[in-house]
Structure formats: C-alpha cells, structure tokens
Length: 162
Image (cartoon, rainbow, N blue to C red):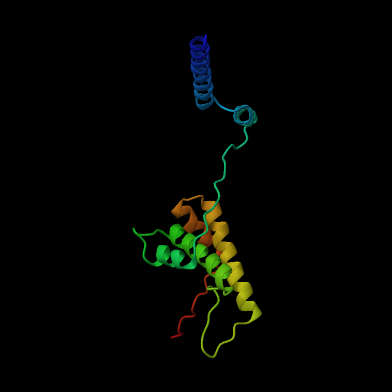
C-alpha cells in the first residue's frame, strides 16, 4: 500500500513537472497582453498616419557627448568633413562647452578683452543661423552652403582709388 502511494506521488509530481514545463514554454514563446496591445496600437497609429499623409518618423534621442569627445570628433575626424558636418560638430561642441563650463566658445577671449553683451548676443545669433541652415538643408551640403550664403551679409573691403 505504501508503495502504491509513493508511485502515485511520483506520477503526480511528474505530471506537475510536465505542466510546469509546458507553462514555462508558453510564457517564453508568447507575448504579454500589454506588449501586444502596445504593438497593435502602434500599428493602428501608423496606418492612420499613412492614410492621412502625416509623417511617421520616430525621433531617436540625441546622445550628449562631452566637450572632449566633441573636440576629438571636430578636430581629428576619421574622414574629411564637408561643410554641413563641420558646422554641425562645431555646434555640438558649443553646446557641450556651454553645458560643462558655461563659457561660449563662439565668443572671442583674449588677455585684455572683456566680451560685451553684444558679443554674446552675436554668438547666439550665429549659432541660431547655423542651426537653421542645417535644418533647412536636411543633410544636403550644397543646399546648406547656398542657404548660409543667402543668410550671410558679406562685407566687402573698399578698393583703393587710383
């Protein structure tokens, strides 16, 4: 009688283990309801955006680089930089230096020179114009150069009269 009870317990433990194994297999191979509903909602949003002609791009978070990393990327590039890449990296460097030290690297510094409020405003305007040109060009270097030349007032040096 004791042997029969032991055999029943062993078979019951084996069947319980089989059920537990089946449940763990199902859990590993299926998606949770929350993830499924989120994916379903994303697909519905994508379909609606496509039908309405809206943009569906997802913006990736911008990775912040330190000032040292920005300097390395700007002054020791792995390949030759075109104009838009150079200006983009210069703006990244400016933002990193501003965040780390509070100094604006677009404002001139010298031993006997104290920058005025106008110098800081001019540096800010310059950075804004660069960023607007980069945004307008959307990666096209030629378009960036044209937009920058359009927005830049070139001062001509007067010629010597004969």
